[in-house]
Amino acid sequence: MINPKVHLSSRLFNNTEQKPTRDGYGEGLILAGEGNKNVVVLCADLSESTRSEGFANKFPTRFFEVGVAEQNLATIASGLGVSGKIPYISSYATFSPGRNWEQIRTTISYNDSNVKIAGAHAGVSVGPDGATHQAIEDIATMRVMANMKIFVPCDAIEAKKATLAAAKIWGPVYIRLGREKSPIFTSQKTPFEPGKAEIFWSPRRGLKLRAVIVGCGQLVYNALLAAKELEKEKIGVAVLNCHTVKPIDDKAIIEWAKRAGAVVTVEEHSVLGGLGGAVAEVLARKCPTPMEFVGMQDTFGESGKASEVMEKYGMGTKDIIGAVKKIVKK
Amino acid sequence: MEELNDKRIKFLEEKANRIRQDIISMLVEAGSGHSAGSLGMADIFTAFYFQILNHNPRKPNWPDRDRVVLSNGHICPVLYAALARAGYFPVEELKTLRKLGSRLQGHPHRNVLPGIETTSGPLGSGLSQAIGMALARDLDGKKYRIYCLASDGEHQEGNLWEAVMFAGKNRLSSVTVVIDRNNIQIDGFTEDVMPLEPLREKYESFNWHVLEIDGHNFEDIVDAVAEARAIYEKPTVIIAHTIPGKGVSFMERDYKWHGKSPNKEEARLALKELSQKGKTI
Image 1 (tube, rainbow over the protein chains, first blue to last red):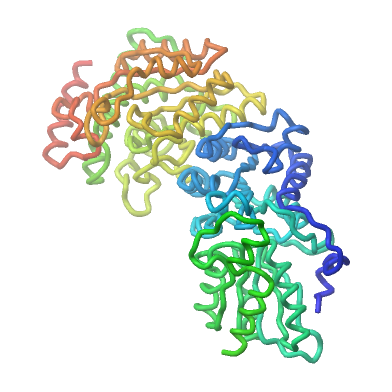
Image 2 (cartoon, chains in turn orange, purple; image 1 turned 135 degrees about the vertical axis):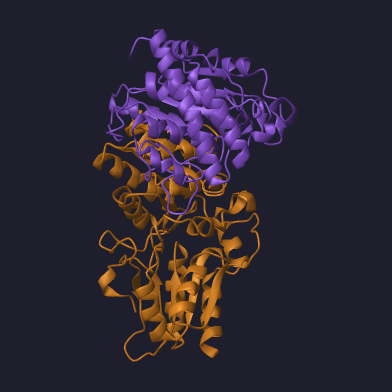
């Protein structure tokens, strides 16, 4: 059953509104800009599709177009970030933080510059553009960097909250965003505390907890659909929304892994090094627990409709159900 | 800024000689590091820290200070020696270069050592950071200037030309680049490894004001920076022709000294030569 304390949308399973998480980023940027005059935004020729455009129109002197030059995007932001500004840099995740990884490492993370990196079009739900534009390694490549924090918002509302929260945290933050419309299933009242995972679903009274699904990003919605289906089959699961992949909420992960005895991670990312890797690192050290990993299985994606690609590469609701069933049998 | 008369030039020459001796002492103690570029840039660093910059070593975070962004971080021995001699931290600390627990990292790191504006080492990223500082300056209505000291070899990096394009387009006249045009890089002469010429024309075509100077002539250095300050419609690049290893005859113009430190005997010879030169200033 839905955890009433997290105030999920009343239209959760019924005629759910759809909006891309990048829209939430765009709205969050404007709010952050209104709240703090030091917030500036840089973009590399993708201001419309990364939704930086709204900020650019509202605060033209605080918006900088760098052209198709992601290395320059990161390093100019580094200079701004050590000079009292709070720069947000937006591009597609394969380009930033993809192409400019070393610049981010040296001049932002190690240099401790106050830069916020927004990687749009992350995951395979980018769809028709194909594998070149489907970032499935970005969580891993950002996660291994010391001094970096990572938000993977599950819907547009959470993306807006994450964008605003990033301005209030000192230092580098990576925010992962999707291209396609996805269900809005949280609400303004849903808690968003950086570093704190929230239980969105737990078994109804009388049903034994058999597994916890730890998810991030828009696939948390699929995890809820899976939980609902599994409940019909009398398999009790919990769904933990792990919006902050770093620093990860190890306390919540350990607590729920102990209670359930089995963990399924769900992410629109490679199963190597992403959320699944982060959860496995926590559990291997403190609470070894059988795990299943839903995500890209060490392969590149391909063109197709977002939903088709997600299904083909094993990230549909039925795949999450399958992973839970597999692990509860162990 | 103090008037650059003969007495002042003599003072700067003495400082530069002292800094060159510091560089040799630091590198032999560290057992590794970059000799040629550090020695070659000693006059330019001396000119900046003792003549040009509007700064206060006792207040390294003073908001109105001029910024020095060292893009080619590997020549940090000259930066460290100049900072120490200017009073940013004790001169004795120079001996800790590259040692465990030292604030003098093998490549400079911001936040740990006063006077360091940015972490650098990987090449080609300094100018963009200087640009970011210039944008912040303009937003804040400040008047400080940003000096990016870069190597010639790092002009083979794409990131650097992205920055050149941006600064030219945006007419960022608060940014001045000084290129250490010493013609060497690790694998040999720049024009053999990957030619950079015509460097002047390249910058000019990106809407920069270009000056070429003798990087060992204090009047040249100071005049060029003064001209850069006077140019309002463009950023300025000063191509400073320098001699790698300058001051130590057996290191001069030999690319093998780019990434190498002297052994004890070489250091003894180098220090002897420098101290003799110091006496004749």
